[in-house]
Image (cartoon, rainbow, N blue to C red):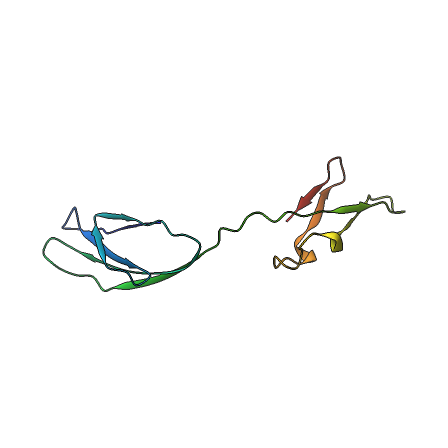
Length: 116
């Protein structure tokens, strides 16, 4: 993420910021790499005359989970509109917080496309 400060009279205001309770760091443009987890960032701007903006706080939750791999079972049906997608065969379906209502068949061609 990037934090910048702007000022109508100072072309180079500084941004001072703190990540997860560590020491404050000052910079013209702050680029912060956040790893997985919950992070709290406190920041404020200061201009060349020493005018300090009110401190702001932002909290971010970063999730870097790997894509969910699913195994699907297509079963034939007597209906003419196509095969049935058997959602209860999804691997780790509920473990990843998904529900069957989130998925539908996009087409009935080969290969089958699962829409979200």
